[in-house]
Image 1 (tube, one colour):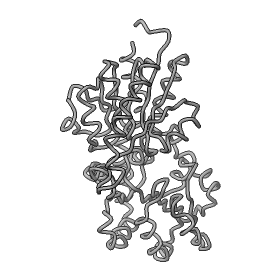
Image 2: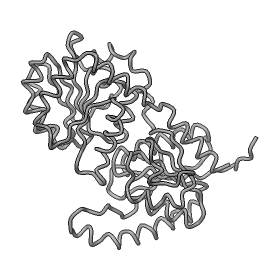
Image 3: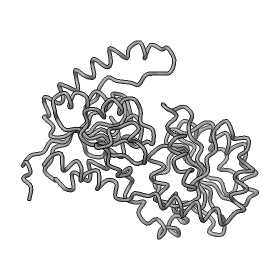
Image 4: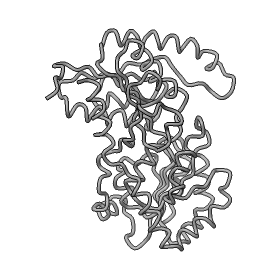
Length: 366
């Protein structure tokens, strides 16, 4: 039996998007289950969604004055050096006061200065890299990190091989075995069990190109005898909710019961964020990825390609959306393709990701 400190302080940093926040919360929840007396503190970026979502889950959070670098010359970019110095200074103050035994970073603006300040004090750090192509921050932090938990193969191109552990990305617990929830899901969304259901996922804010694609092909999709559960995102719901007047179409700003949304679906069209892909591997249904071209390092396309290469999904780039009807019609007609896509993507699931990540955190605090 290894000796464990009586009081453990765990610092977690990640945010900016749900793809960074929810893995951070999942890791903290598993650590709290194992170490009920541990003290937790999150560090996020001021005015970002983590400042609201983390306290909702019962955790304290401190905010740093930090943003990313824009691709064009803006006032935000000119302020970046000042924000970085401020964030390093404040991260250092937070660490001095909280005295963490370990610091975990799941990506996002705040994790850079937080993990860097911790590493300078020789506090063990763990990076959880969700994407198949890491951003510049994690590449820099990797030099001093003790452990780097990844979800894809081939990341030794970017990180020291001896630090890499393939764990997968944390996913929500309610996605385990959604196959038993089909009837409940159809009742929840009031869908017709005799029709196939297409689920469209553009992310919590929404994706303009995807929404335009669905709107312009709406009558055609309905003629294919499909019913649609269409997550427009909160930025676009006012523009697209008029389509609820059509039979077999329902629009949603958010889908709070993702387990039931997945359970009710037969086909899925989705962005290719790392968390979404990890969930879709659990779900095991035919997926068409339309990656966002507006993300750093074009990482959504790279995430999707890692799945497509294993014949586990279909990829359509935004610039190729003119060919959507012919590609999607082919999928609808080809039952064997549908089965093989579902089977192949399911093979890629890593359902115990959270536990494996926390196993490695535990080793750092023993």
